[in-house]
Amino acid sequence: MLLLAVIYLAFVSLGLPDSLVGSGWPVMHGDLGVPASFAGGVTIIISIGTIVSSLSSERLTRRLGAGVVTAVSVAATAAALLGFSTATQFWQVCLWALPYGLGAGAVDAALNNYVALHYSARHMNWLHSFWGVGASISPFVMSLALSTEAGWPAAYRSIGLLQVGLAVVLAASLPLWRRVATMGPDQPTEEPTVSSSTNSTDSTGDHVSLLTALRIPGVPCVLLAFFAYCAFEQTAMLWGATFFVSDRGFEASSAASLGALFILGLTAGRFLCGFFADRVGDRALIRGGFALGAVGAAVVALPLGPASFAGFVLAGVGAAPVYPAIIHSTPANFGHRSSQTVIGIQMAAAYTGSTIMPPLFGIVAGWTGLWLLPAYLLALALLGLVMSERLNRVTRPQG
Image (cartoon, rainbow, N blue to C red; front, side, top):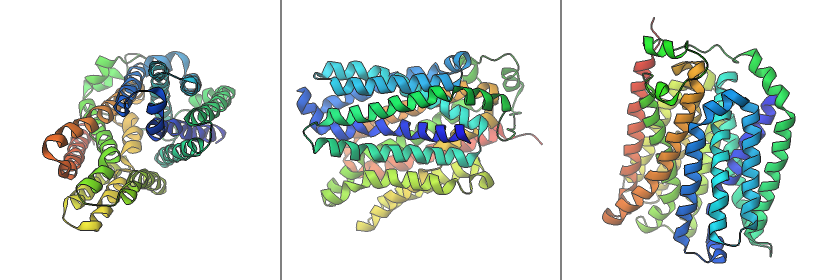
């Protein structure tokens, strides 16, 4: 339980930096002397780092252990955030974005796999709820910093120092990680019985290569489902407010709260799902989450005036359990030995979806108009639902 408390703090740490660039960029780009559009360059560098480290997470975790990878990765993100606080030119921000992305991707994959192996579904949901707590706090830290003479560097410095403190706590907790790892999973996890190739993957040794993992039946389905989910989440968060202002005539002050409400919906939904996740099961949570997300997108598409606002919030609440349920079901679907590699690939697919699909919608909307947003979200939700159902058929245990 002591280690679990440390992991909860680590998930708060994962969320803390995620909103800093977006909340501080309106001031940062002016101080750095670059156009506002240059934010895309920073986020692309961060995404490249996260994808690379996610794909390398299996080798790192196998050699060093989840505790060491988590502690070192948090230390790397702390150094990057402190580096952001000293940046006076745009190229320096780009330079520090690389270790930030590398650290964020490695800790995300290592932590998620460790929890999936050793703790129940309720903790997976609650832990991701705590990520939302961190992601909700950082904009307020940035707002407070911008209201003082210290400006945006103070926000990065404050969050960076918090990360340093957490890295020290994680380093001190390393014996606990090893002790829990020797105790085995919190719950017995059903090994997949889909084909001989899957079983051979789990019996050929500790290392499972990326190519081997990609050949496991069902892995392409889960990658597309995860890609669709993260594209759905990030597109809604990025374009929701603009859609309601430009297409539905909402006041900008009202529409601006949509992004926060979407995050709060995710946070609250994951917290509530934790109470019944073990009874309902991961597959039902994924199915219900994608379905409710699709319903929410369909409600937004209807000409309901202000009531369409509720559809957007409904989509956020519905999407809440999908991410933690996909992660938690990975050992059951693909085996314990394959789970770290598969989760690393899933993280890469997630970051790819969240990096490519929101800008792609912006390009398409430039031709068609923002009215397309509900249909775009609906298509992503249905893609995720179809792929997750195909995954269920491929990995259904044989009676």
